[in-house]
Length: 86
Image (cartoon, rainbow, N blue to C red; front, top):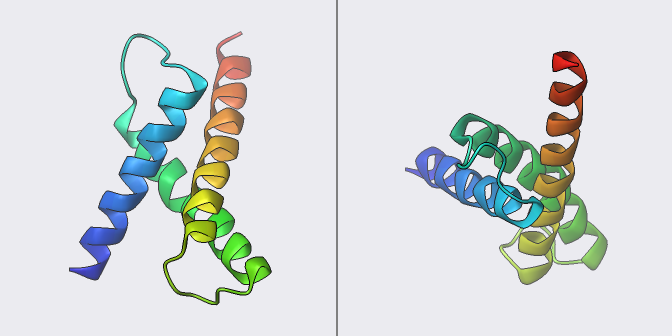
């Protein structure tokens, strides 16, 4: 159940990152949402939680770090995919 919860949380954070950066091609790319959400949540959320001194508990600093991490991963993904098409 924990793994399914983490995947769902990552997918929601990744979709939120896409909405913040603006949709491309009219919809949300769910594959990118899952990957960006999981990677961004792990890296950004873990770093923000540890820097804020919250440890590994679910706190606002971890959620904000997850969103920032997912935004960075989504922007990098879009940038590299845009270069590959050009």
